Structures are given as C-alpha cells and as structure tokens.
Length: 324
Length: 256
Image (cartoon, rainbow over all chains, first blue to last red; front, top):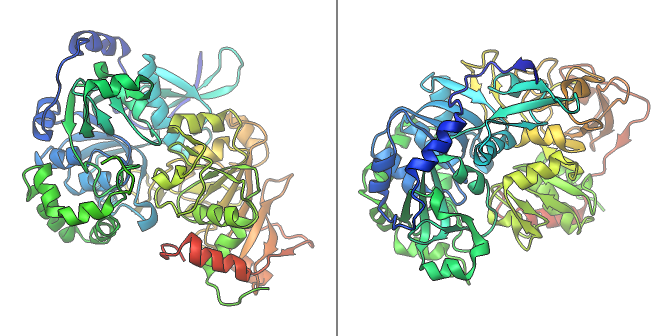
C-alpha cells in the first residue's frame, strides 16, 4: 500500500495489536468473578500516572463523573486523554491533570467554549494537542476493538484537521482511491457509565450508546460505573441488551446519579443550574479552584458528593416513569 | 403576515429552517441547527428526519436538545444507535444535508472551528475543535452552514481548515479523496443567504435578508463575492414562525 502523506501530529499512543492480544489473554479473566468495588479502589488499583485514558460518553450525558471526580481527588498529574468532552474534560483540565490530548471536541455546547481547556492549551500546560474528527476518534476505538492496527476512512482528507493529526493518506490497494488511515487507539484505562451492570460487569445502556461498545473493546483496563448493580438474572432475561460483556470489564462501581450534573436517559434530567453556574465560573480560574475544593476535594466520596447536592435536588431531577 | 420585532438570531433560525426539506435526512450539529430543525418540524417539514452524531435518528423534536447526545435527540425517535452507526451512514451516502456552524469561513466554504492564530501549538484562542464538523463536511451530500456575518468571520484566508468546503477550488475535494458530488450548498447568515458558483466553486450571493443592502453584505465580507443580477429576497419571519420559535422551540430562551 502506497503511503501518500502523513499528518505531523504525534501518535501519542502507538497501537501494538499483538501486545493487546497477549494482554487480553493474560490480564482479563474469562471466568465470572465479582468485580464490585468503590470508586477509590477502582481508580487507585488500575490508574497510574502517565497513563492514557478515555471517558465515555461526554460531560453532560451519561458520563462516569463519580469516577472523574475520584481521578481528580487522587491528584493524577500526567495523564494523556482522548478529548471528546464537555464538563468532564474541563474539570480534568482545571485540575491540571492532562499532558497530551487527542482532541476532537472540548467545549460547552450551549454555553460556549471550555474555559479551563482553553487556559490549559493556550498557556502551554497541555504539552501536545493532536487533532481528529469525532468519527475518527470513534473509528480509532473501532479498529482496536476489531483487533487491527488501523482503519481506512473517508474523513479528514484535504484539511488541517488531517495535517495536525497522526493519520496517513494512502492509495487504496483495491480501488486506487485516496483513503485516510486512522491508527487504532488502545486505552490504558477506559471509564464508562451505564444504566445497569451485574457484579461480573455485563452492562446494559438505555438510549443512544455513543461510543461505549467500541471504547469498551479498546481498553486494557475498563472501569464501569453503573446507576444500579442488578442481579445476574436481570441480564440473563434480556441478553440482547448487553452492550459490554463482562470479560472486557475490570471493575464495577455502583454510582446512583453517577452522571450528575449530567443526565441519564430515562432516569434523570441534567442539573441545568449546576452546569450553567459551572460554565460561568469556569471563566475565572479562582472560581474554578473554589468549585474543585467544594465539589471534589472537599468530599471524600460519591456518597458525600450526593449529600452535598441534596436529596431534594436529586429527586427533582428524576424522570417520572423512570425505573428508579 | 410578518412581524418586524425580531432579533438577528431569530431571523437566522427561521431562514435556516426553511432550507430543511420535509422527508430529507438532516445531520444536525449543536446550536442554531437544533432550533432550525425543531422549527422546521413544527412548520413545513413534519417528516424531517433529524440525525444526531451520538446515535439519535428520527426524533420528534418537542423539546430543544441542549447537547447532541442528550435524550431529546432521540425523543420518540426511530433509532437510538451509536456514533459509528451515524458516521458510517454518512460515509455510505445516506445523509442528504449536514447543518454546521463555525468561527471562520473562506470563499470556498472551508470552515475553522479549531484555533484563532497562526501557530497550532500556541494558539491565541483554542476553539472547541472539529467534533463531528469535519465528518459532516466530508461525507454528507450537501452542507448548509449557519453563522454570523462579519469581516473577521468571512476571511480571505482562515487560520485553520477544520472542515472541508471546496478546499482550493474546482476538483480539489475529489483530488483530496473526498466522496464525489459532495460539498457546501448554502451559507445562511444574519445578512443574507449565499450559494456556490458551479464552475469556480466560489461563494456567491443568493438572497438578501429584509432591510439588508448589497453594500452591507460586501462591507462585511473579507473576500470578493460573486454577485449576479439575480439576487433573491428572503422573507421576514412570519408571525407563526416567531410564535412557534418563542413559545415552543426555545421557550427557555437559550439561544433567542
């Protein structure tokens, strides 16, 4: 296959597919074992400084925020990250957690730019930003999930998004057309929040599935937080709903309202005032520090966080007819 | 009947909304496109199929989505899938229109939503990045861009090509390997609607907004537009459009 050009961005996490296979053989038990633990145990057991992480879905929607808060609470400082994010990426940037980023979108949608991510990049604190499109990052996970080192696509061609990526343009060996090859992205640790999981890690999601299926299969370590840990029978009664099978999963953390202040489809709406206040505060570095002190460093765990939010507030977010 | 009391955003949303065809598949980006799609469904296009990047297809947009992955993007929808399903549908040619925004645009409809400044590694301003923008601009059959008009936005040379328009002109998309017969179709602004010249692929004035003169458009555009004798006139928002927009689409006034 003829390589026509290469993006100038750093390939932050080069894919080693054979090592990934070996890893999955030796580090992923195929037996059904109980993987329940707390946020604190899961993060300290599997995350090390310098690791490359990914967080699904994003910020205000079904995001594993109790885990993100735990990452920040434990004070990691040199993580590399797949940057598809809103609120959670802003928090990680605000806590000076990120060194290198594969970036597709970090912003606040209705509330504009991600101020903390802006500061972290414009000040040079984030050492390296490599550009990708949304499809590209998801397809990079898909390649890893397929167990192949790259995937050919028809996006990013002809643009600066390509130029500042680590993709390659090649001539297709079958058709002669130009294709953009994306390198597989294998995460050291992936974090995904789901509606329900059993103690073995079989996971079900209601509503859109984002890139959960692909990222779960692209993670050397996968930490799941779930609104509810259900009996194995619940999973077995609807096995067609299992989007993440147990053998991909290393830890299962029960985290009701784990996506707060974001939403959880069918269960609760997003906490608009909390998100809006944070988006406003994030314009000021000192106010962000106050926020981190109050909502993350100032509480020991997710339960204390939820106490701080308050039962009345949480109850007001619940969707009528939701199954909780 | 029209109502003269409207703001520039309301006008932008109404005009973009009229471009959304009933029964077409439309990829909806964050922000103004969401409002335009919701308004279109409640006006002339009840069977508009909205497509949102994280998996929602064919929603009934009763409440305004605030995120392209939130549950309103598949409210009473046909499909709740994942991002790969959506992007692969686009790559396979199933998406008729893609609706996008951006910070800067050039005469070929190339869009920047990545950085302001000339050094990628030390940007003056870091913007949100491509997100699904590049994918939409690469794979949808026709892209419709919605943005505010101004010299600092309509530039001879943009700081970064995040999303491909016609790149450097005729034949450039195909030469880069992008799917044939794709590209920008319209640019909707608070001043006018623009199209693209078939031969040169350069931006041309298509229609003026109410009360806007040709000079207003020229003065606010940083590059030479193609101007022909045939310039249409966009209608003002109707009373019905404004009423639906204010009372149903964005009653909490996030955008208007």
